[in-house]
Length: 291
Image 1 (spheres, one colour):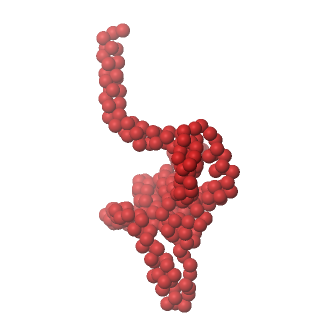
Image 2 (cartoon, helix red, strand yellow; image 1 turned 45 degrees about the horizontal axis):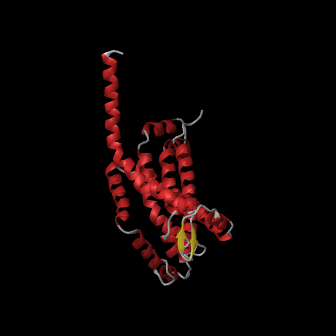
Image 3 (cartoon, one colour; image 1 turned 90 degrees about the vertical axis):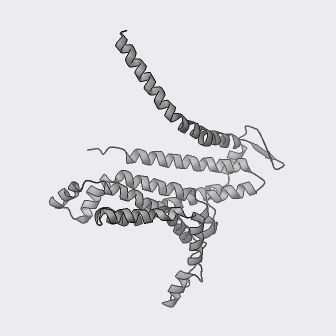
């Protein structure tokens, strides 16, 4: 082996070591605060509770009892349905706003709009949820306006509608921002070419803009699904917690005889669902279009 090859190998080794040095803090962080707690959560799902105390064991009792309960299956599909509904609704509402910010306003206006969309994240989500609690109450602002024109009052709290309002409060600004970032990067020459070839506005949106912005649209929907699926505040305070979502079921399970292992089963099922949806959606978002 020549000295040149040896020098090249040493250089590559030093580069890999240098890269690993900078990656090490992230790896340590992930192991300590994600992988480690996740493994402990999995192990805890096999523990047994006796006399309100957990005992180390390797039993499938918790898994069998949770999967055999109708309320667990009902809560799972109810939570899944709410998250899917919130994702579709949020994506549909966000698209016109993101489209306008991407193609109908100046760059300066777009920057200011994005800034104002980010501002809600400076405040507590719980505070924003309680503000809706006042607005949607039977004697709140919305019902007062409706009664002024001879309608109502309508029950909006402790309903699926109230839960959806909370989900939109949590996710809509983020989805608009992600969709705007995606659509604003589209080369305008493609849109001009579509118009020149006789495409109308709807055809241009469906055949040009949506396929080109697919990655950002899917990622925005994934974030919406993840946040809605795991949210506790909106279904509890605005939805009335009946029927309970999985996040509420975790709290109820821990309060019932300190059944932390059974709560761990619910949490693991939630994480498996989120991982499945996230990986499948990201694979679809970055998949190249076939001819």
